[in-house]
Image (cartoon, rainbow, N blue to C red):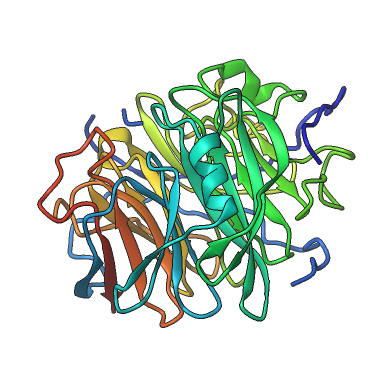
Length: 384
């Protein structure tokens, strides 16, 4: 499906949650399965004070996999263990092996990206997700900023050759800031797309806008069956700029979100949930909106990509220059813990590699950081 419109959305559903607030000082900005019918509700986080001691999980090893990358942004692992990495400003893709060997992706799709993508501000070639594979061929989804909009493209990668790309979702408004861009395939097999408000705050609450939303679509770009609003790709609304998505093994869907001036957020996403922007930023007891399960002062986080393991949610922090770990508990989440504080600068993305390690992508060459001699880098991080 190319483009989308809807005349009515209806009143958003609301969920009630308590907040894990981390006080601080100081903005940066295979076939689908059935819809999960009993995903846990974000109801049982516990308010806590900032941690006073060392983290319960320690970083045991950090190894550079590759360096000298130009504004790496998206990260997705292929069936063979390589990672496909998007380069935001260069509008290209590279393949990175566990040994650090890098291969530039070429082919008709790569040529299309070079001519189609218009990098500016926070826009460019952003998210990437693996839709499925067959033999040596892998179907990819890519989120790209074009001349007139942000759009989702689909193409087949065979080895290091990317075939012709086809738009499956267009008409997402673009801007210098708040372009969203994260893609992820959920446990149900459908593609989830995060969009920012593109500087137009009311769009986040506008049922006819694709902006300020998390969208759930099929591999062809149609609204996924079972979406909360019939005929609509909207899964949740009221978002300012979601930058990370991931799922825990019990079905909870987590999303990281940039705040404006005060609070960044980690949210548990429920179908049809309204997350409050621009009316609410951070903690809230308003029953019309879903409150975050963890918040940070914007100087301490500006959370970008996230990854979920069996024991925690890991968030890459840009302005905060650290890796946040939010422990998973049987009833909610625990106290956020800061790792790698100030050691590698801005952190853009994090993913769980096939060997169980975390791959952390730095973000120091995006014009807002202070690049070191090997930036930007991908790091293999072991915790225990």
